[in-house]
Amino acid sequence: MTPEAPRAAPQLLLDLSELVLHDARSGVQRVTRGLLAALLAAPPAGYVVRPVYDAGGYYAYAEIDGDDAGGAGRHRPAAAGAERPLRVAAGDIFLGLDLALEAVARNRAVLESLRLHGVRLHFFVHDLLPLRHPEWFVDGVVAAFARWFDTIAALADGLVCNSRATADDLLDWLAQRPPTRAVPPRVGVAHLGADIAATAPSGGVARADEALLARLAGRPTLLMVGTLEPRKMHAQALEAFEQLWRGGDDVNLVIVGKPGWRVDGLDARLRGHPELDRRLFWLEQASDELLLRLYGAGDALLAASRAEGFGLPLIEAAQHGLPVIARDLPVFREVGGAHAWYFEAADGAQLAAALRAWLALRAAGRAPGSAAMPHLDWAASAGQLLACVIAAGWYKTGPAALP
Image (cartoon, rainbow, N blue to C red):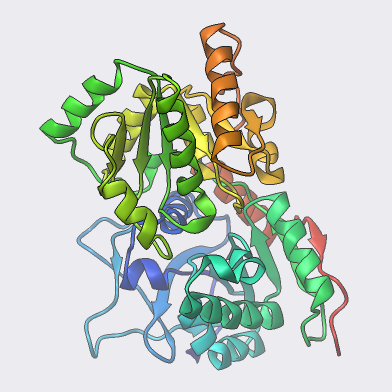
């Protein structure tokens, strides 16, 4: 990082460290790609948008493959020896758009130096779940998240959250554990967009996928979308469907998501299940194109998570008019409002009862529709983000910091 003379336009530096170095095509990186594409397509007035990445002890400008200057997800690190370290001036903004846990903690001194040169630091916060529920995550992730959060809580000028629920949780956490800093951080909210086509989607629908789509049409189909991990409650959902099947309810459960962590037992149970490829379908590597087709072919999205920062599948489903069945969480109420059907369930039996109630409403034509659920595209989501980091339209100021 090198200071430079004042320029006509300050930089909006977008940290894409995870996307550039290892695009896992997770939900977080779908958000990163969506916001990146929107910011590149319509840069904020008076700023030049420049993607950057962790080059190992410092930040460098990301390179763009080919001539696709606006391509989300097509940025890459420079060739060894050709890296271009950041050149900054007062008035620049560093925005931690990606969830770069290790990079941010490793570059804490670099970020402190950026602040000394008049660069404002902002970070996007998806949730605090590894802090609130470490039992749901592997130890390495919990420790890395804690180091990342300690860094941004101490250094950030602003923290932008994906929902009011996440923002309120963040403010509560800071109130209980105020960081050591001179001025408290500001906290903002930018709801996520829902536009898979704008996030460098993966394509391809194989012949077997076409056959699956045709088979699903024969009975009601509920769809679960997201990586398998404990908080997503796939195990409880499977128990509920097993009770439905034993009771004579002829329904499909389609799970779209790769295996994550702490789900070895569930993984084995799914692979050996007698209903697999009959009324239970697990798509570990579904393309975005196939996911869009499933949103259009299903009868409802089942959002069974015990905790979420936002719940992007809710609005993706709503874009396709797919009804939403959601656990009664504050963030799902914030996102879905009156356009989803909510349940509470402590075990598989209670969830089975809730699903039977929804199926009865569906049969009677009285299940809530999702088509009117408010949602943003990524351009509008980026606009809410910029309203915080550039226009200072913050939600709240964090609690008083320790001196």
